[in-house]
Image: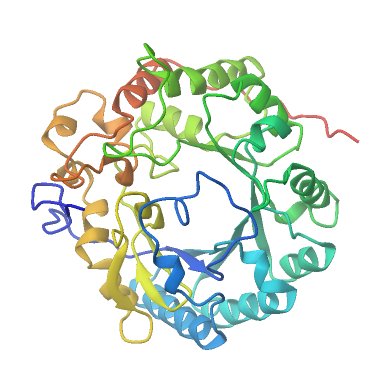
Length: 394
């Protein structure tokens, strides 16, 4: 496959100074207990997971923790966020999760505030694991695409069996008073085949502290599904939720929508999916290698690789990598089309992996350009009313 060309937004020539990194994704495991057909790790061009250790070794965790602490100390960071990820991190088991969290806290807490999190499909969540999360203050987000019909379109077991009931059990566990404090929210991938309002209602029924919607990972070589004749179907889907959310009094924070509203008011986005804020994230794979944002695996094999690792390199080295630095360069890191666009300061060119095209690399508008523009324009005049608290359901 063709590699990115050396044009304005190519990683070969970032135009702005790099910023320190304050967000880290630790791939605690490289395997998963589900077979989601939209997963960028297993179902897209990059297949590097096949050569990764199944679980991150304790020595790798210790070295990564030390590197993060060193970087935080040098740059005097007020807080760093570490997300335990996979694969499926719960495959590591309660004992390994306990050791990993303890190692991270022991290394980083004396230097700066550690915001420790985990992203999981929830299938293996148990009270014993929840006790570990509470003990180390690890906030957990759960992936759920809606009701059973919506969730089972993609999020199934290898044998095709549904995962929905298991995920619902996990969410019920997190709603218990003892564990509510570590319930971070729900992550949902948009699917046009699912009714947006039914998805919204199904997610809110789980009483999440926060919801985020993700566009399916796609690019110009592998474009997203679009119904014939629909110009902005993804914007239309999200705007249906936006209207209902506003009508409901914004009962729960929705990160994408709140980020669009924040950028409309000249504020900062809370997500790399929109806005011009610098990306300050790096991934540590199970073998200790540093990678760029791992959703780049949806572009081509090796797209996220840096050639760096925690054993031989510091986080400063990763931050200076051209592929990471270009995502910190704001407007100057975008293609000419985006830089000339009137909504660029709100859209920000969209998610970096969604710009990829063979031959021109990432020097393109997002494959979701029309949808993003429609979202920006439709949310421009909106201001969220005061959020009404939801009554907890039994």
